[in-house]
Image: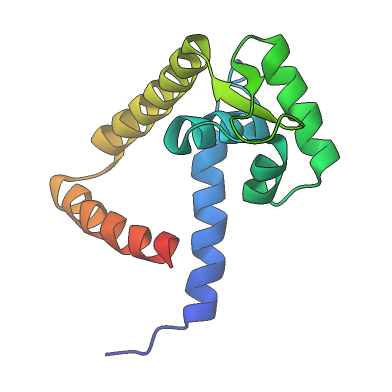
Length: 140
């Protein structure tokens, strides 16, 4: 069996995943930074702007701008921090959860349709097995 060039595969995988993500996005979707913030708050619960900036690996000022945009859209709400009155705790709103769910459903629907129309049953099974491998890499 030929040896796999992991550097070449890694490069190709990064490009293909990026193309998939871009194809699944719609013009009406929230920008990626805003969607990522909603995802963090949905999965992990309320956080401060500093915690969100750390999770996204962006400057506090950039996150403050994103938080301001999401707050203006009514997708997140600021509230008091339980242990530090100087801090604000950000929470996803019901409208934020609905928007996140809507975007996830649209994207998954697009991908499922593409898989059904472009891949054979065996290729779909192969892809299903590959998802577990990708998840392992993502969790590393």
